[in-house]
Amino acid sequence: MRAIGLTEFGGPEVLRVLELPVPEPGAGEVRVRVHAAAVNPTDTVLRAGLVRAAFGGRPGPYVPGMDAAGVVDAIGPDTDTSLRPGDPVVAIVRAYGPRGGAYAEHVVVPAESVVPMPSGVDFPAASTLLMNALTARIALDLLAVPAGGTVAVTGAAGAFGGYAVQLARTDKLRVLADASAADTRLVTSLGADEVVPRGDDVANRFRALASDGVDAVLDGAMLHELVLPAIRDGGGLAVIRGWRGPVDRGIHLHPVSVSDGATDHARLLRLRDQASTGELTLRVADVLPADQAAEAHRRLAEGGVRGRLVLDFTAF
Image 1: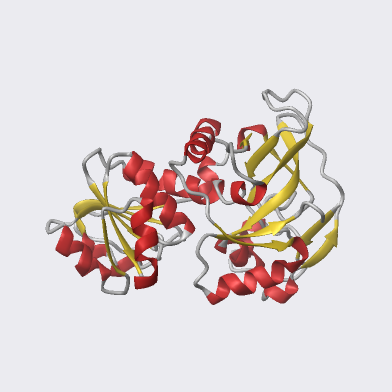
Image 2: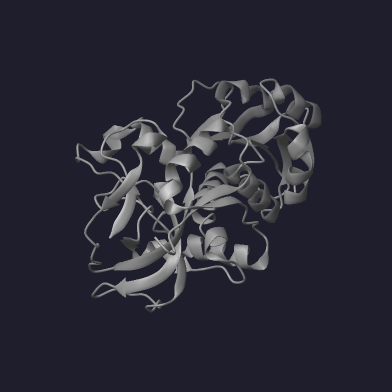
């Protein structure tokens, strides 16, 4: 099969077309013929070699991608699943595993990591759901703010941030969010109760709306220590890139790892259902042919992308 990957770490230019064996599903696994793969910041981190230790010394080639949409191609023996070959599905893929990620014609994943595609959407839109929505869902579950509480979301116009806003609203939380002037309408449409200008001093703006401090922050902008003053004593901070503090005033730090929920089938099904009903908005910035993955990575690095860039593997 063909895939998009790399044999050495570096900039976007290291991405190229690779010829790899078609993976065979084992017990408890499903193979998916990929039609679309979302491009996430995590993919650029893998490509640049910033977390090469995650490969455990395994040599390349390496294939990025954690979000795939496609059709079931094969089901491994002794696999307990209601899925059948030909079913349209979405899957979350562990790119650091031995079989590589979603930038490929075929991926093999645990059956628990695959759910039916949301209704009424195409493959590119469907591919933007699981990784970012699951990350937001895990963050909210870790923070465990009761209904009626107040959370703040930084980076609210991004994919993680947008899902965090929408999921927090479905949890009946008051949601404060940041945005640039150009993104204020978007973030408001996602359900934020109050939107403040983004920036390094955003904590002061959140405090102006919640004088005692918010119960928790979901830090999609990775402001880290800069957003701590917005949080009440004993509140929570969910971080998405492993920041470890320090924190004070009894604030609880919650590093979020999407891998912790990659096989939580019930949680993935719930996100799929919420996308089907419109509770979660699937946002595609652009769709590029799979062999233009380097261009997608360059555009993501330039910033300003709203929604996800998606690679089209349908005719790859």
